[in-house]
Image (cartoon, rainbow, N blue to C red):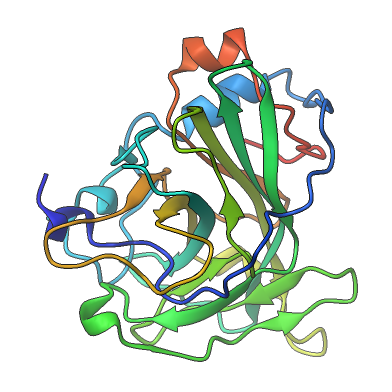
Length: 271
């Protein structure tokens, strides 16, 4: 697969940390109201085509068409990881002008091959981010339209040739020799930007996806170049709705997830 086809949809700018994210919700599995298992929900985001094409992204890029596994469980010896997400407008346009995308519960899980146990290494509802050119050309970016919400989550918009690319403030440590699987999951929904103006969420056409990148270490800049893309995998681009919806990525198959599902706190997010 050519690097241009998978196009570094990863974290170009991220703060470094000397310690991984604080684990929480370990051992917690919340059943969904629809009866869909956590394993099926996560696996479904690595199957089939995207629900729509992202605006401004050439269809020659594989992730513009559907989910893709890149490095998978092989970190090439690198010792850090971070999840990320991206919000795009639909390729056919987004007529909504008073709608924002609200983000919460961004979680990164690593399955330890040695023990078969899941470790939650990142967990945040207030990621940082930037607005990048939709095709990431030239790594060009500008400050994103991020708003801190009263409940501690964030919201943002995308458009005008820019996406919203977001990620936890700190990377997490990993043992490159003990990776049995990776899962990233986050929640997103549409909210009204200005409650004094008309609610146009019904016409909003925002897409969201999640993924992850390996890094050589907790500190240091983006390691990608023209010949190598350090992405782990990229999940399916799906529409953001007015109700919470989950967006996931994994390096595991559906049967592997069913036999050992991660302890994801889904909080009733819809598939």
